[in-house]
Image (cartoon, one colour):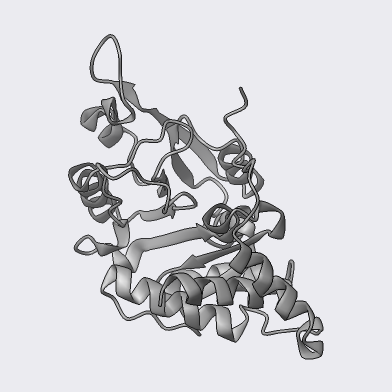
Length: 263
């Protein structure tokens, strides 16, 4: 069983497909759109995340639309990691994290999730050892990558676990990159807590999302990063000089889908 890929084995919802069909029928949407994100989409995401985080998000300055969540990760590492910077990666992890960090001349530093009990376990039974985690932070640490809800374990990090990471980030002036591609895949008994809602963490957190996993359209490759403008500046520079912009019609369709589910 390959747990690396999140490709669904079911079709997207009708309203998502219909949104794309409608977008394709509009002549103007076959041309370039805004480099940093189609206006309708960044506005829809800003409204949604402003509500979810209780933080007013500027759609123009604090959201970037990328070529999938992987594009957002690429822009983050290339835009914020300097040669020799250390990046803490929690194991197990996406098969792209390590290679992307190395491409940016960063140094991956690994810390594993460990089982807290023997025998049958749930995803919640995989935890970080606080002392082991703390030992990975030093003056060379630039950022830590947090994937929650976590793939492939399904673990949803608790507020207490996030707070432990947050306090270490504050103490060592470290950026927290949160891969929330699976933000909507949470069972009822679990609660997805957003790192950027913890005290002192908005200004040091880049959060990454995915239309592919949200709407079951992984082939569209539409993702995004949002966070404070000073951090997003580096990502925007890489994006504009690498891919320039993302498909207009696909962004329009995702915008309509986001509006539909957030009414």
